[in-house]
Length: 125
Image 1 (cartoon, helix red, strand yellow):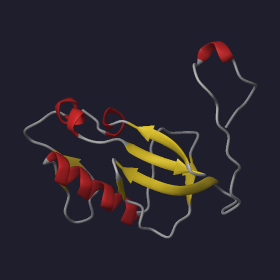
Image 2 (spheres, one colour; image 1 turned 45 degrees about the vertical axis):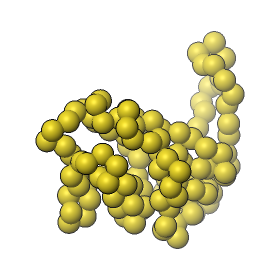
Image 3 (spheres, one colour; image 1 turned 135 degrees about the horizontal axis):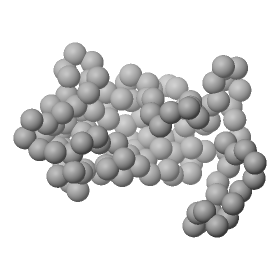
């Protein structure tokens, strides 16, 4: 999403653009071609798009993909996840900043382009 042009003094690197997928008229959607947790492919849903929400920094996953993510976080960190539906994971013994170095990145693949979120980006202390 871009409004008003690009100020190249405010970033380092390359910009990447993607075409919108006309799946739903009420959402802006992009092609989700993969979802990785470290080296593990955790995308098992048939959903082939992701919603881009310009009004929040939250990330929404399908229930099955999120459950796969929560299961991986739990098994690799020792965090406990709400077993009913994995709404959240937590640790009574460790702060997130101590768990983060031992967890892998979460990688969204949009049109086969990787976008990496480090553990410090998906854990909240």
